[in-house]
Image 1 (cartoon, rainbow, N blue to C red):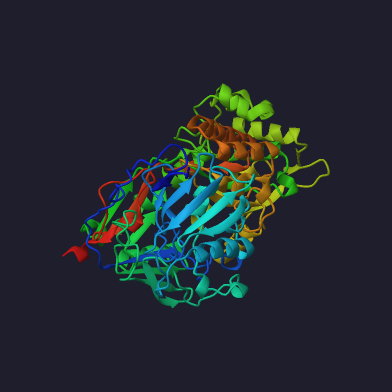
Image 2: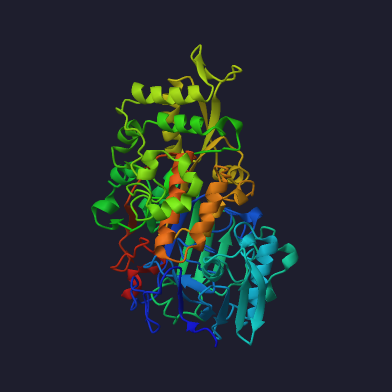
Length: 586
C-alpha cells in the first residue's frame, strides 16, 4: 500500500496547521500589495550566484536570503516561522514518505513555472541536486551524501531513496534548504564562476537592475505562479525591493536617518540606546520597535582557531576565557544592557545550562561524561563573575594557574612556554564594535603577560580569511534555533574541520562530538532529541572553543512609519518578508 500523501512535514510530531490551512498565522492575509521598500547592508557584491565558493558572501542579497525572503530562487517546501521545524508546500504541492524516512517523493505543483514561462520539472530538481553536489559550496555540495538514488516518477514527481548516511533531517534539508535551479538556463561548465549575468528564477521577484557592488533592485513578477499558495499569502508585498550597499555601518545609519533606507535592524545596545535622538524619531516618522522571539541565545564570542598550536590545549583556551572581564565590558561599553552567555542553547529547553543531565542524556554521552565537570553535568556551571574592574586578581589568578598547568610561566612580565616562547596571538575583527571589545580584552590579557594584537579588516578580507581559516582568533556569531540539525556538523563536526567555506571556525574535531551529532539527527522522539542537543551543548561548553560574550533576548528594529507589519510575531521573531508599504493601502 502506498504511503499517504502529506501536505506538510515536521521534524518531530505533526504540522500544527491543518491540511486546508489558508495562510500562516503571522501574516496579514488581506494586505494590499504595492509600494516599495529600500534595505541597506554593509559590504559589496560581485556575483549573482550565492551557491559557489568563489561568490560566497559576496553575492547579491535577496537572491538566496532568508532575511529579506528568497526573492528569486525557491525550494520544494517552505518553513513556518511559527513552529520549531515544520515545512509546507511550495514548488512541491505534496510529499510522500514512509515512517522510517527511507525515501521521500516530492510531487511538484503543475502550476509552477520559471520566470521565462517554462514549467518547473522533475528534471530541474534532479539537475539542481546533482549540479550543486558537483560544483556547489558547502553545505549544498553534501546534500546528496545520504542519497542512494534520485529518479523521476511520472510527469510531476521526484523520488529520492536514502542510504545509510542519511538521517531524519536529510529529507527536510532537501525540501527547504536546497534551491531548485532551471536546467534549461544554466551552463554546468561555467556554474562555479561568479557572474553578474541576470539569471532566471521561479520566485516572486525579477531582477530589475544592478549596479555592481552598490545596489540591486528587484521588481515583483505579476505572473508569479505561487502568489495564491497558502504558504505565500501575506508575503512578497512590495512592487519594488532595493538593496543598497554601504562601506560602513555609520554611513548606512545616516542614510536611514535621511529616509533613503526604510528599515534598520539594530544589533548594538549602545547604538539603540543613544543614537535615535533625531527629528524623524521625535516627530514619529521613524518608529522604534522591540520584539521578543522564543529562540535560544545562540553563541557569540571570540573564537579560538584550534588548528593553531597555541590553542590546541583546552587549558589554555579555558584560561583565556576566564580572563575576559565581561562585567567590565558590559558596564563600560554597553551600560549593563546585556547578559553573559553560558550555553549555546540558553533560555530554551534544549540548553544544558539550568538542566541537569538525566539518565537518558548520560547514556547518550557514554564515556564522554567522564570528561565533564560535575558542574557542567549538573547544569550549574557558570563563567566567573568579576568585580568589574577589568583587573580582578582572583579571576586572573585562576587563569594563570591553568596556564601553569599547560606549561606556561610569567618571565620578565611575559607569559612564556617551557622554551621561552611568548604566548601571543592576533584577533581579527570586522568593525568598530568588535574592535572595542577586543581592546578591552587586550587590556586585561596584558596584565598577565599575554600579547594580543588586533587587526581590523574590510568585509571582503574578513570573509576570505574566514573561509580559509586564516586567523588565530575571530569574532563570530552562531545563531541557535529550536531545531538544530545537520548544520551543526558544519560548525562542530570533524568532517568540516578542514573544509574551506564551512562554519567550523574553531576547527573542532572530536569523536565524541561527532557521535552526539549523529545521535541528535537520528533522534525519533522529542525526548531523545532534546537530550542529544543538551549533550552537545555540554561538550561544547567544556571544550572552551569560544570566549562567550553576551546575548540579548530582544530584537530591535527601527523603521519609517510607512512600513507596516502584522500584529503577530512568531516564535522565530519578526519576519521582514511579511511587512508592507502602508502607502500602498491608501
